[in-house]
Amino acid sequence: MLNWFHRLGSPKIFFEISGRWQVPLLVLSVLMLTGGAVWALLFVPPDYQQGNSVRIMYIHVPAAILAQSAYVMMAVAAAVFLIWRIKLADAAVKCIAPLGASITFLALVTGAIWGKPTWGAWWVWDARLTSTLVLFFLYIGVIALRSAMERQAGAGRACAILALVGVVNLPVIKFSVEWWYTLHQPASFSLTEKPSMPMEMWLPLLVMVVAYYLFFFAVCVMRIRNEILVREKNTDWVKQWLAVR
Amino acid sequence: MNLFIASVQRDLLVHFRHPSEVLNPLVFFIVVISLFPLGIGPEPGQLKEIAPGIVWVAALLATLMSMDSMFRSDFEDGSLEQIVLSEQSTFIFVLAKVVSHWLLSGLPLVLLMPLAALLLFLDEAGVWALTLSLLLVSPTLSLLGGIGAALTVGLPRGGLLVTILVMPLYVPVLVLATAMVQAAEAGSETTGYVYWLLAILLGSVCLAPIATAAAVNVATDQ
Image 1 (tube, chains in turn green, red):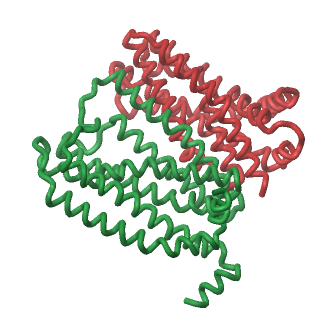
Image 2: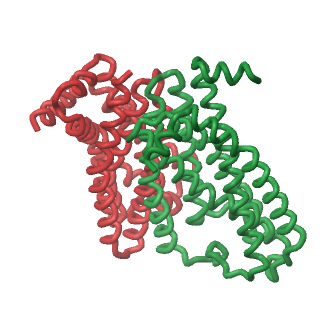
Image 3: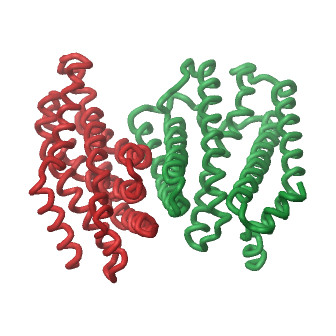
């Protein structure tokens, strides 16, 4: 197991293995995204209260779930990089940050679009919205630090430290913000709590969540491969690989 | 421990001889606060209602103003590198820097609170809660800000970047502190908030210097 881990940590071997995986992963994720979207947008019955606007859920909820777990993945990669100095983990941190930020942005925007017809406002300073916004700022911080330190050797470690500090802060933000409102405003939207939905609405949601994850992994692998090529451009195997192309 | 005391003493001495770096954030704090009545209108009722938020945001900005200089001069003259290379603990050194930063920027802000409260028509309960909350939180601000300051110390213009990096980390204490002041103004119990803010402070004392020391190591490594 450890041996396998070490082998995968080598950029060359990761590049070879991921080369076999990326196309099936991408095809599967796009198929599931299309299938799930068609199912959710055309065939799922409209909600008895929200009507057709409930369909935004199938875009919004997977993005919101993925936004948080992408940060956790980035932090795990950061920890791996700081502890074992595996360069591949640094490449992963670098590639996940902008992806995670865009997914968080997607969650915020679709949330706003969904909020307008259901709550009557684009934005509410509700616990979940606020903590997602802070999550977005955390991603932006990691990206900003990386781009400011671009030419410096310590950029990877600095970003890894920042990502780890952010993950310590994440639950604190979540709870403090929830506390803030549970003390001062009674919950005016029970919508933010998970509704117990019927199976015919829940299944396409599951498909969409899985599809989002697969798509995320596929794009992530593509970006990491690209990053490996840039970083290892002076090695023999990259030159050989490029010569074959 | 010697390193700790020596470092704090040196920082205090340096800043007493060049007080402008200490005074500028305080002036900034008062200027920002006095801008709000001009922008919003001088009605006492309205100002009193938003006073905790104004004071807190102004305090955060003033703290961030001085954050950038926490490690900069030490980095530029090479003493930061000497500390890292020496057998002294970087953790202790970082903690000393944070303590002197708090003595020079956090504590004066706490002492300015009555003036700020006067400008914004806060009542007595509000003033006490505001001062207490700032006293409890300003060390946390220095501790968390130290991480950002250490991460950006090698960069030519880190000031704005520190704000972007550190602001999200400040959200929890900001939320709890303003909630505490509002609760005090409404006449309700604030002990729960005090415990929370203390817990966050103690947690930051233990954890933040680890991250800051790691960041200092990265900065001096290049």
